[in-house]
Length: 622
Image (cartoon, rainbow, N blue to C red; front, side, top):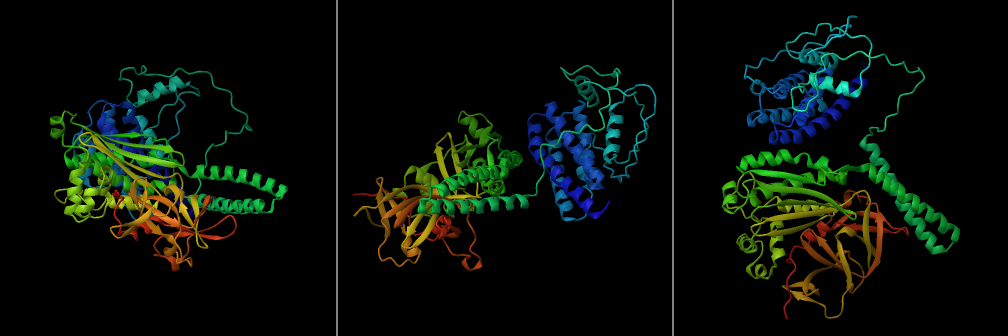
């Protein structure tokens, strides 16, 4: 084989085995909760076996050895010789972690180390000393002998698979030639019965009777040589090519906006008709390209059962994780971006929300707590919620802790509403933990969640009921490739505000604004809305402040931006401004508008962080 072919095979193995190992994480946690689930047990066994086969083909001996020992343990369970317990699951999960590490080494070209003997010993059903025997190179499968029909037992079947995959078990020899039946075909039911027998299902209730010998049937006629095989319905595409296609589609959106603006300005009927047709085709193309970027949110969720399981054991709690809405589609760029924030939310739910088993029993609750991770689509936003049935949050305790830690002063704390008290958990340095631990207590984490979600153009909301539990809900745009914005004018400058953060727009009346705690605010819906004058921020030449207010929801804050004119909604592609603008607060990039002008796209997280002197929304009096 040449080097390019070897690399191609290695990459295919990394992709396919990586997908299997990702599913294994969730499957093993599920198997621990239901060790008698035969279907799940067989799925886990097949995953280890498939990874072993691919690793054997690439001569990755340490992976083969580890997978084979995991197979041995799982096969004992499949044959009913043992019931998988906590010790077995710990060993299997540790093996999975080691396999993931080996996959990373294979991807980087680093050498693989043999698995620790202690881990291999923990995978042996009878705790025999683990002997790591080098894996022999696969020998060619012997030609079948032309004898009468017969059957093979489990060990012969596994040996045959091992020889086919190039992954003979450590210390075993190649299987002896197997008697072959004359050319025959079997139907689907007979094939399933044969597989059930070979995989140890025959003794299970409801299983098909053993297929001792498959009766020969007349040979099927040979298909003509010119008969074409059915074409594959899927194709694997490199993500770089997909991103390039998305970028080109984005440029087409900008050109479409420009043409629509020209058509509206010149009033040419033929031009307007052509622009309308281009508008329709561009929308369809954009939707198709965006669909190619989408992945089920289940790909993100499948990593969390293991995390919750390990954390619950560390805390000494009993917790059930329920996943909902796993089929909801999400932009692939958001899958990794949301991983860390959701881990923080789950840790918070387990550590601060769910009570200890004894405490739950005293409160009349089940010993096992319940945490639900759900996803749904609302319009053009994805909403992900983390709910628990724990103790809930006490607003008074939150007020007291915020004052103790200097997050707000006593006067500000007294004016906070119940919802605003809940949102204190997102303030830097805030924590209700009595002591610092490996899990919580340092006042970081939830602040990181708020910052990251805001950077993605998302929002956070908190709901809680004392004694019944809490819910933290985050909403993010459906895609980050094309941004829908509200165009506003400040003097002669155009600014683009991410539409997902815009709550409403209103015109400021005389006497509606004033000062509160030294801060410019506007009375709006019987509350004080902090204001930011974008005229000064943009260094515009206008002498007077704008009188139009765009109300923004940035993280847990509400902020009003003063502008001169609100122009309307537009779909844009954000382009970076280069190193000269790195670190400029409030600027995320730039875009070209439909009339060919340049507009700055606002970084609302940076805008809010540069304006930290104002408190959260305060009640106006008088």
